[in-house]
Length: 109
Image (tube, rainbow, N blue to C red; front, side, top):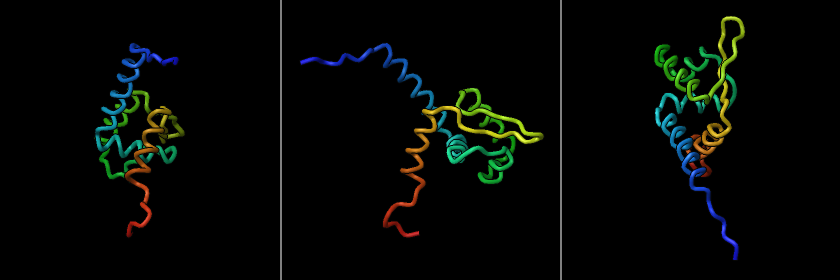
């Protein structure tokens, strides 16, 4: 009977990437930012208004997300737009959204 051998070195590298993503997501502000961005591209001002995160904190957390290459930006005039760049981060956010944000069947509003 053939067995599949997992490449231990590849697993270690993948585990490191997963842990790094989980560490970034462990901050509530960054998690909320990525949750909003999982629904589509947003302007910085929109994110500030929707989430109520004050500008210095918002800028700091968006910098972390950029540095980790989880989001990309584009400029349109004076506006800077953010979107999720990492398919892995988007997949995790979709699972978190389904588990914690979507209305549950039978739940009262």
